[in-house]
Image 1 (tube, rainbow, N blue to C red):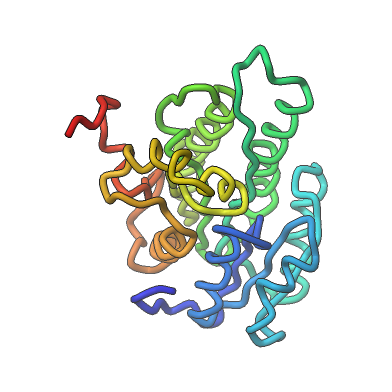
Image 2 (image 1 turned 120 degrees about the vertical axis):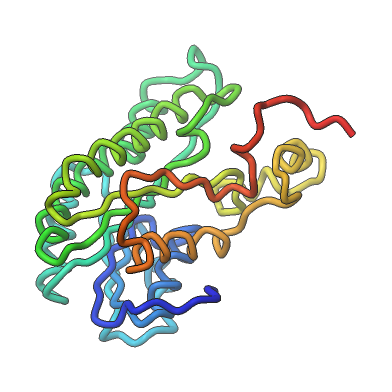
Length: 258
């Protein structure tokens, strides 16, 4: 999955949302580079599928609802009990809901907030002491929707802007304590959450028209950026929200006129 290899031997990695899509690709990329990886999500079967091809002594599946306030502390405690340390925490789990703000109900908003924002908050609180002990790093999955605005998805964008803001400010607070904090910002990426939009050229074309590289992203495009940010090669990088977007965020928003 990655062209480079990184020295993650003896390192322990936590990936939320590890049962599919970007989370699965990220977890497997760390495993391919010899890390021990704990994946977290609601569906144990999906988590076990992510880990199935790898040695059991380097894998751990934790079925938890990460939006629950106590879940993150329990997850970190389980990882420390099993592996003795935590070097990298990847806050990747996320959900999407679009539509005009007057059409979104309380349930839509609470789900967006609880998974996209609250779960990040709880994970950071729980993971930072363990990361500080080893000079570790926290990496979040934000979005290009956390950098600018989009039509018809104000609530979703608000949650991703919150993640981007958290990352920048936490990097200031924790840099002197030895913990680096960064995020990746994908654009349109083919995952279980978006596969229906990619099911026909008519639906996919408007997204492709915004991407200079001329194709959607795939989880395998995202994982190498996370590995880089977690690696010693990024030792002097913190507080960054890195677009991994095929050039989407390079545009001013003007239409592509051929």
